[in-house]
Image (cartoon, rainbow, N blue to C red; front, side, top):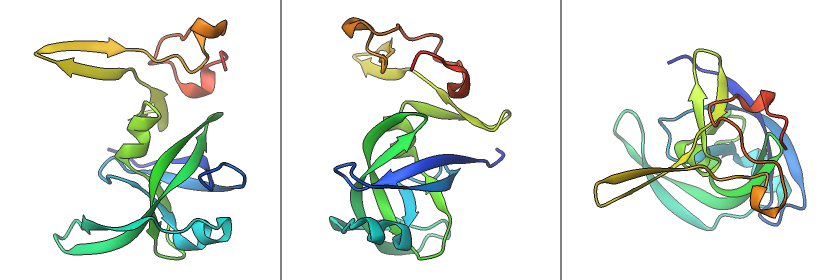
Length: 153
């Protein structure tokens, strides 16, 4: 799979202050990695230490915290790892699934996907509507439509 980057804004949990970074899309990582030197100026402090297994099999611990992430006009909380200073930010699977996004590696973009619910052998697709159709907003369109082409937000 090819790699690509997306623009994101990282903010404190209350959403008062944000900073822009470009993040590599990394579905092999559980959580989003944001360099410590990006998080600390936003007064984001570690909630706990979490164990991680690196690709080579070695186990390490990193600080994690809840942050606000903004992508394509949507803002929501996600867990972020305090990455080493000066390293590249990347989006992990937890964040991508929380935003209901999946990589389109051919076109190097993120696309909207429906949430999945599986129960007792049944599979149901649930299309969440961030535009708020039940509240008078415009209903969602095809979830495979690229985010950059959606005009219902």
